[in-house]
Image 1 (cartoon, rainbow, N blue to C red):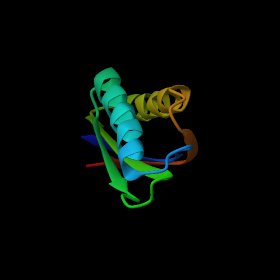
Image 2: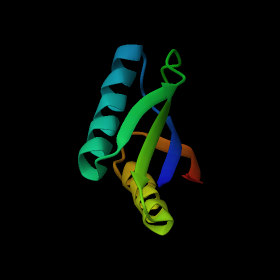
Image 3: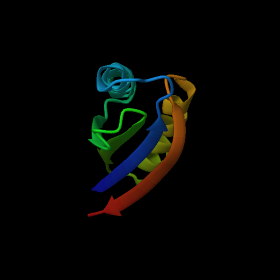
Image 4: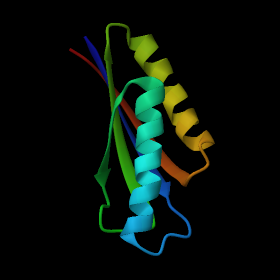
Length: 95
């Protein structure tokens, strides 16, 4: 079993409240979840309204397939254009 874990850090421009940030984050999470059937959630910086940290995870049997899917997921999230992607982190664990 292979587990792929990713973390994406976004800068959310033109947000002046947590309510505006929540709207953008929910849209990003929903689109990633629907397109990739991945586990997705906001995992950090909940109180900072111009920054969002989103965590994703995928489980499978092939290391290369999980790596490729996470790469596509990162590109998809950046191409959404809802927020500026600042940083990504990727870890693949074989169990």
